[in-house]
Length: 219
Ligand code: DC
Image (cartoon, rainbow, N blue to C red; front, side):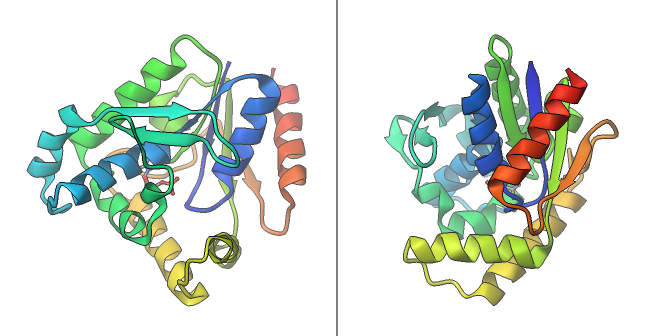
């Protein structure tokens, strides 16, 4: 079975997707992490992220792999652990530009589909239900208010000792929503057959329970 979880930045997709995957014994695929690795690779190579041709040239040199980890899945770029590095404010600020390129989207979509070919997956992202796995049996579109999403990210950052203000994070979340929703290729959009879940004011357990109910009803 394939479970697609899409939605805007910081709606809780990865937390929920990971719990569901563990419960179901499926593989969790964090597609946002893949776009973040490409962005990190471009920044490390000192490539201008607005230079589509240069970012495209870099693609064949990038190998992305995952390994189970707590509290988050481990992400590797050419064998190097970049789990923390891909969450930096600089990567976050540049990932929307990099993920808007056709070459990048094709490469990541191919990789995502190949992972989902042989195993059950819970895949989270922006275009999973619409483009990557349009035949997924379960499609969830997770949303939450901008303020609540920014507040969740703010608390996470504080726990990690990062010092962005709430206003800065709120601005970043809003600007990424806008870029991700308005890009030409595979924009963030709810698939017609996806079920929308608004997680504003809901606990993680309540969201997981709600999605489990949706899965039970569908399957
Ligand atoms: O889920 P995230 O915030 O880690 O994703 C980072 C960025 O990657 C997001 O701003 C847009 C892009 N992305 C995408 O274009 N398509 C996906 N399936 C997942 C993420």
